Image 1: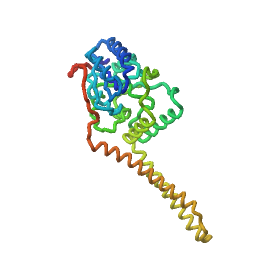
Image 2: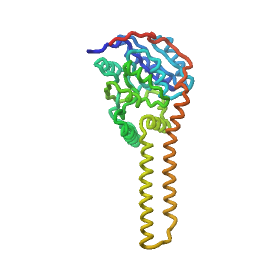
Image 3: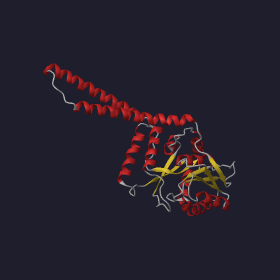
Image 4: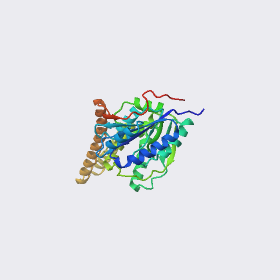
Amino acid sequence: MERLCASISLVIPCYNEAGNLDPLLGRCTAVLDALGMAWEILLVDDGSRDNTALQLAHWSMRDPRVRALLLSRNFGKEAALSAGLDAARGQTVVLMDADLQHEPELVPVMLARWQAGIDVVYARRKDRRDEPWFKRTFTRLYYRMLNATHPRVKIPADAGDFRLLDRQVVDALKSLPEHNRFMKGMYAWVGFRSEELPYTPQARASGRSHYNLHSLVSLSLSGMTAFTTWPLRASSVVGINLALLAFCYGGYLVLDYWLFGAEVSGWTTIVVSTMLFSGVQLLSLGVLGEYIARIYEEVKGRPLYIVQRRLGEGLPAETPTSD
């Protein structure tokens, strides 16, 4: 039986996207009007330093169906997405970026799959030929490691935040309490019936990407510590193997002494061995420290984000739904 959608919310996190908002919202409103249902666009300003907030205020006055959450500072994209999910009122929710790399015209295609019974429709890049080879290689290896020790949860390697979520999925994501949020992993963890939609991202319309090397590494560590414990196990395995090698080498030295007598040994073996073991110990402490840091962030219990101002009306708080 085909499901009928009564309302839809578009959640769009924004950080210094003033140059993209007019063309983006123009295309979004045209697409949503053509659907013939109640809709809202919810934009989350993640502490932008340009005129993004002014643009959002203009659009919220121009069309009351456009809502905006102005966060008190930059909390990061994962927090901005969570703020949007917490505030969205639609029966279905679409997450997308503000840089026009995610085409609003794909929303009807996603909605058609939802009507056919799919709870999560996620856009997946057809290829990464436009990226440097080292980034493609790192991404492929990273997701292999991430999925290696979690057989029940598989995170698609080339899928981002551009996706349609059923209201049940949104409520499930809102129920997850952790602050160390890796949204790509959380989408997969909650389950539900999912389907990919191959697409080719468009070129950024204005501005530049806000993800630098530091941001990507930080996000990768967050995902690794949030969804797998294999680094801790790897440290244990390395430690056990090195201990076995040391034991075998010690046995060899004792046997050599018994058979051939003592020889004057150089310092090279001692120095190299000491540096090796010290490096392994420091690396293991670093891995352990990453997990302890995540625990520290969780136990503080601070809010994930703070909303400074709310603009626009959007959908009614109690939006009717249809199955």
